[in-house]
Length: 124
Image (tube, rainbow, N blue to C red; front, side, top):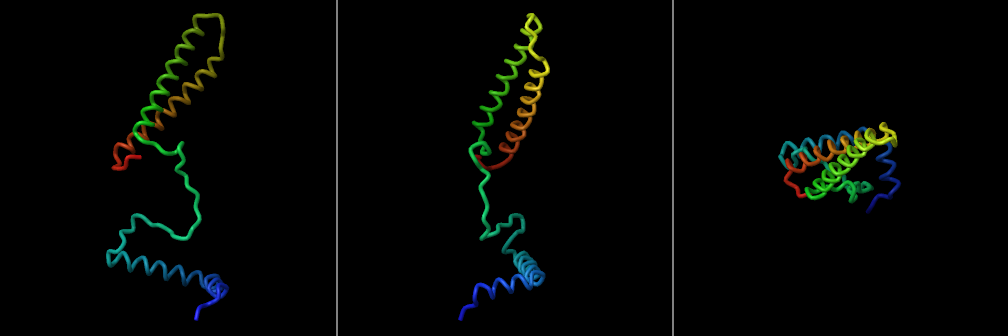
């Protein structure tokens, strides 16, 4: 004999506190007998979307590539500022400075990613 879907659904809806208590007791029991460590918890049956696209996936090669790009662009913008100082063409210095500031923030981001990558044992 098998309960109807609505029977299970109604039971879960009517007894949320009791079910939560059962789950807490079960996890505590598993920790006590050393079946789980409690560091990583995975939930099965949930629908989730992946967030590890190509733009969010970094390895050492990609980090070096981004840092090199930032250095190259920073040099270009600094040269542009120097040329702007020497010539009569007045490009908005604030625009160039904003770009340089944005590159500095990106550089910090990639340096932090590089530190995390170096300290972890994973290749990505």
